[in-house]
Image 1: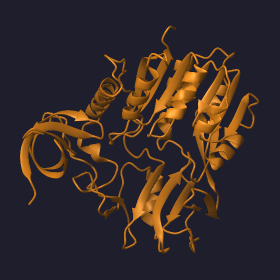
Image 2 (image 1 turned 120 degrees about the horizontal axis):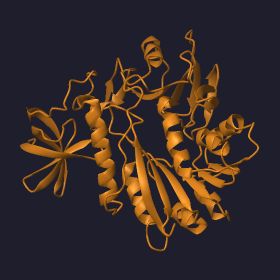
Image 3 (image 1 turned 120 degrees about the vertical axis):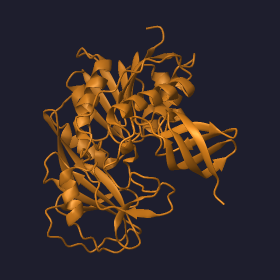
Image 4 (image 1 turned 45 degrees about the vertical axis):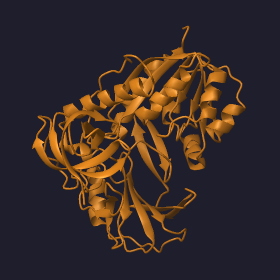
Amino acid sequence: MAEIIELDLDRMVAGGFAMGRAKGRTIFVKYALPSERVRAEIVGEKGRVAHAIPLDILRRSPARQEPRCLHAVPGGGGPGEWQIISYEQQLFYKREIVTDQLERIGKLEKPMVHSIPIAPDQWGYRTSMVFTMTRDGELGFWSDDRRQVVPVDTCYLMHPSLQDLFQELNLSAEGVARVRFVMGSEADDRMIVLEMREDVEPEIETDLPVSINLLLSDHEPVNLIGSAQVTYQILDREFKVTAGSFFYPNPQMIPILIDEVLKRLDLQGTESILELYAGVGTLTRFIAERADIVLSVESYPPSVSDADVNLEDLENVELVEGTVEEVLANLVGPFDGIVVDPPPSGLSDDVIDGLVRLHPPRIIYASADPGTLGRDIQRLAKKEAGYRLIDVQPLDMEPQTPHVVCVALLQVADK
């Protein structure tokens, strides 16, 4: 029989959970806010930590609002669970979470975490969205407990042009596991990327104005219809992005990210810069226009090919294909600065060791997860490593979600 409790919630924590305490346990409640009192059902427990979902909101937070999406409820699935929170309060909570992760995991005392700038668009901003296929052939999102895929008919985070394509698409190919909708900067530059349960090329026909690509289990893209790429206009430059290559799903925020990285690099035109996890060369382009030379490292071959096209007019960029660990092990330097933009899992021990061995005056860390950022800063701040955190700028790359991207500056401690 399910356990039902009542508790007061006092703060927001990583993952978008409101936290409270009851019966000697720490309780994390999704779809709830600090200052609320809830009646909740325990859905998971380990030791003195439990997870719960709210059944009733007994005392509402002033920041709570009605969500646009019917799926922004317990069990509804989907990426927009913070639709229940006013936008201004979302930004407050995200900064609070970043500070908490740096203090608790990073062991930092009063880190400098700046206020978060308002995103240009809080709705309809995503130019990339992944859906999972249900057993009945409908597209949806995994439920919170990952037990079922909940069909979706509208996603308000997705760009309207992709939403139109989503509504028009009638996908009958058997064996499809996931479908990614992608668009470039132009509304008619649209792509569908299919992932199959087995690496079998599906029979596809369409009269829709859209490119279709297949992504194999080894992440190798296969073009089926139309183009293998979409094109993004970032500031005054174009970037080709192949199916399977990573690109931030909110392109309007990328110029802000670029500006924050460049501000912390403080380039004078004479510097040698190492960029790790460089992707299709978006940051590389704007760094190279201000530095003497850039060594750009990326492990995903299609992204390296994209970067080769995107940066073909620049003579001061060297592209290296390989894992960051392998490349770092053979680098000598020196470098005036290193830029890292790793996946949410952060930096491996070998990467940390490589950064410390090269020992650049500054490291700029673009992080997709405040927890792993805090962990990696703590490792780089050890006495033998010799770095100290200067500041962190969180960015709201994905409004209506708990996700936050941070740009952090670390300098050699004696600088």
